[in-house]
Image 1 (cartoon, rainbow, N blue to C red):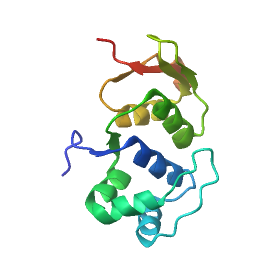
Image 2 (image 1 turned 120 degrees about the horizontal axis):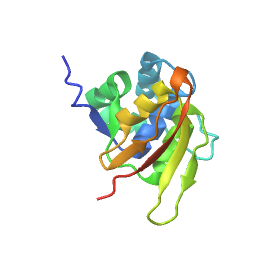
Image 3 (image 1 turned 135 degrees about the horizontal axis):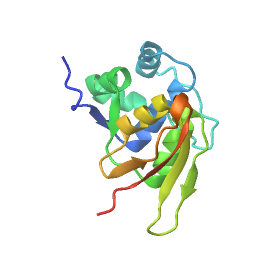
Image 4 (image 1 turned 90 degrees about the horizontal axis):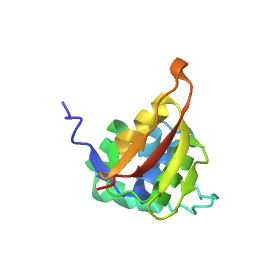
Amino acid sequence: MTDTKSKVKLSQWDALLVESLRSLGWSDEELLRRVASGELPADESEYQFDYGQLAVLAGEQPELFKQAVTEGYQIKYNTIRGIRSWIAVAFGLEPKLELEEGQEAVEAELSESQLNRLADVLSFGWQINGEAPAGGAAGTYRIEPVQR
């Protein structure tokens, strides 16, 4: 039995690559098979993803990669722009980026399941503020650095 606290850690870029492939509608099994066999698409998005990096990761650390895909992962270190990109790639949303010094944040309208998924992958040092509205509607949330 795997301890939920011991999620594997992925780089922010590897997490974006995984989520980009998931956005194609691939199951976990198909994603694992295609990465292992090198059957990877050319990326036409603004990100210009090179999925070959995932094949290298899967080849060098197959158990880590399999666990990240099938059981989830946590990002090792998030940046503000990386969080915005992850939300865009994983959920197909366009969150707002606030870059004013001391007020840096990503603002996004998220469903409860999206909120929970984001909270699971965020690296240490980030917090999510906002409240879910009644009735299960999407809420607006601010993802911002923890202020010390």
